[in-house]
Length: 394
Image (cartoon, rainbow, N blue to C red; front, side, top):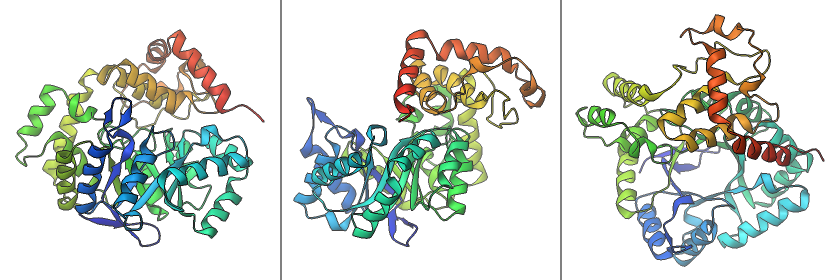
C-alpha cells in the first residue's frame, strides 16, 4: 500500500474504505462478511475508513469490528455531521455524541460537514455556532481534523474552501467529473492551499464499469496494459499528486484485494501519453449518447440571470448516459439545491452565452430541452420542498 500525507504530515493510505455499501443480510448489515472485508483491507495497509451518520448501520458496524479486533488506534475513522439536520448548537452535540457511541470511540480522526452543496449551508452552520464548536472539539482532542464533503458547483466549492482553515476536504471526482462539481479546478485549488483531498465516487457508483458502452470496453481491453475499467479509473486518479486518498465502497474480499493491488502499484505521474489518450477515447465513447456537446469550458458564464449553463447540460447529458434518475438526482444536488436559483427557466434569451460558446451550441434552445427533461412536475415539487427546508430563514 502506498501512502500520501495529510496537512499535518500523518500518512493516509492511497486507498480508503468507503463503508456506505456494506452488504446487507435482510435489512441489516452482514457483519461477518463486512468483518472479513475490513480485516483484509487492514492487513493490506488501508488505514482510512469513511462512514457517516446517515449510512444505515454503517457507523455501528465499523465500531464493532474495530473494537473486536483492537484496531481503533491503528486506523483513521472519518465520519460526518448531518448538517442538513442541524438547527441549533444542541444539535451539534447530540449527533456527535451519538456517532461516538456508535463508533465505540472517544475521538474522530477526520470529521466532515456532510453533503454541502452551497456556501449558504456552511453559513447556516456558522450561525448556530459551528466555529466555536469546532475549536472546542479540536482543543479537547475529540476531533483531530475538520473538513467537508461536497456536491455542488465549482464556484461554491471555492467559496467554502477559502472561508475556513480546513484540514481536508472530500469531493466527487473521476474522469467524467473533471469539469463538474468541484472538478479539477477545485482539486488543484485545495492542493495549492495544502489541503488534502479525499475522493468519493471514483467509479460514479460503479457506472464507469457497469454502464460502459461495449466499444469503450473493447478499447480498454485492447490497450495492452491488462487494466480493467475499474483499474483504469483508479489509476487516472492515483496519477494526480493532488489526490490524497480515493474511497472505494468495497463489498467483497476479491474487490478489496484487487483495489489494494492497484493502490500499491500506481504512482503519481505514472500515466503515459498512450494512457491519457485511452481516457480521452473512452470519454468520447461514453459521450456518444450525449444530447449537448458541452465540454464544460464555462466560456458561456457568467449568465446575467444566474443560470448554471454547464451544470445543467452536464446533468442533462447524464440522463442519456447513465439513466434519467441519475441525471435528475445529480441536477438536484449541483443545480437545484443552491441558495441562489440557477434554473434554466431563468433564461431570458439574451444570447450572450451563445456569442462565447466555442462549440457553437444553440444554448437557449438546449436549455429549454434540458429544463423539460430534468424537471418534470413531481421532481420540481420535490426540489422546491427541499429548498424551503434547507434554506429557510431562522
